[in-house]
Length: 518
Ligand SMILES: Nc1nc2c(c(=O)[nH]1)N[C@H]1C(S)=C(S)[C@@H](COP(=O)(O)O)O[C@H]1N2
Ligand SMILES: [Mo]
Image (tube, rainbow, N blue to C red; front, side, top):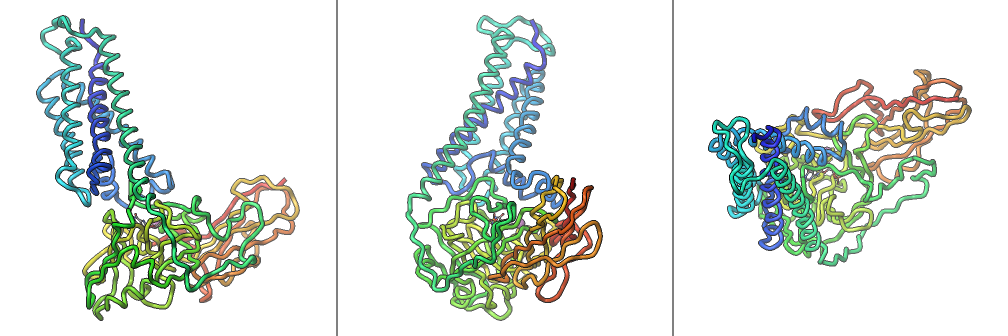
């Protein structure tokens, strides 16, 4: 009896699943027991290596299509691609055992190479992948050997005495695939729990800031659907290249100042908490935010001004940039000037009164008013290298993004929502506008290309944060309508009308919303 090719493919998939299941489970133990700081998980290592090599058009497309679910999308894409490769390897190994198995091992080694290439990797980190590949290779050869001849085998001998029937092979391969997937899921869950527990074990008591900020009632709005002035931490957008949120133990955390300084400095978490902290209202924006998009959020940050740390190290005159680096080796290049002038560029430890959530950089991150996140807002920050733009560049610069990233003036309509069905008569239009570190001096709204009307501006407790606005459309008549918004910053410059995509230095264009009135 020969077997259908689909079964050969399934054998390949089962072998792949067993490989990953074993590797991911072991990787979790590596992280937990050996305290590995690298990426022993081959899935995360390959994913991370892939993210680091993503061209700008692909990153742009992924963020535009999947938004903050881009990591989930990457996971699903990787799973599909891997299943396909394993299925092909199964087909090959069924025809030609030797080359098929060798190629299977070779593909596994690519995962091993990815593990060794990740920041903080130790040679032993590759062991889970090696064990997984061994297990997977054995499974593949066992399934094919006991499953009877495939249509391509030259000698069409029946299954041996211990051979599996077609149904038996299907069951075995299916069960092994399920086991492997279970191993992957368990491995991911285990390592997440282990890291979380270690970091959370330390109770955090934040120092009382010497300068506190408060949000006046007049800055917030009661219009339904209008952005709250402060974005709750749980709703704050998250963008980073970390496939797994780094869990940093504050007891082991250090921030080093290196490079063009009189003296290199290293501070601990306790040192940082012992400094004089201030609070600041700062709106963060992602350079990938599309016109009208939601990759923007406003928070009350607490931290120690970066300029004081830099002053302690003594910046040398030839320096013009600070390359900040995170625990996972991501970097941002920030002009020295904005870190040393009198704005509130902070080494932040708290967000809206809480220690930073792990996703937003616990234990410490940079928050710099006026710049897009990719050139300033380093989460899980561990090093500030004082350097020069002609000597160093941040993570996104060689990937097609501008070295400098000042935030462009922008405005967004929150309500009505696009496509809303409204009643005729008075309609409240409301939204946000931002021009960090310049401030917003005017917002105007337009209906159907008609004259522009000035919106009411709510209070602006900080020029580094967004400003809420609202406008009452007095006489919405039945039919389809287009609402448009534009802002003017406090220097008198109007928001750019010409539409441009996010790459290389931030989108432009006026946000518009279509509604229907009846
Ligand atoms: N370590 C690290 N920090 C990072 C990033 C990153 O990929 N890694 N991304 C930056 C980008 S592009 C943005 S827009 C902000 C987003 O900060 P948030 O996730 O807290 O909103 O973080 C910045 N800090
Ligand atoms: Mo970003």
